[in-house]
Length: 218
Image (cartoon, rainbow, N blue to C red):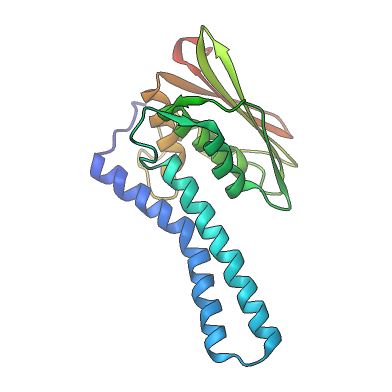
């Protein structure tokens, strides 16, 4: 199957849909909380509403900051991005009472496209451990080029059906929608970096390795 090519306007529309999907939940919760504050007189209920608004606002902010760096043109003035910023937005998005982030790379400036790839792989990895676990991010050298390794470890760790094909640019249906655009976009970014993504998986661990294309075993 040949790699699917999306028109730029379709790619932009699908990514916008994905971002809206990510933030509509917490934004809706903020609206609900504000409505409670308007109508509710009971101090305990008002306190609950305020707490809901605070948590939802923090969630919306974390998602938008992540999407800005992973999908958008954040830091477009330069060609490199501080990995400290990448760590911060990743930690804000995926770390919770069930999921831990282990970020091993030292703080450094890395090509913007590779940071986008790293963030998108981290998002895919986090989705593989729906019951929680540990996401570990590493950098490695392959032929003097930077490679990326993201591991998700947790109970019944597994990628959603079709993700590997989407990363390769060959969706099984031959089409891409707003639900599948993120792994498809990750594959686009990888190829734009001259890299390919290899997937290793067992019952407890899913590993995504992005290396220079010539270094990926066939």
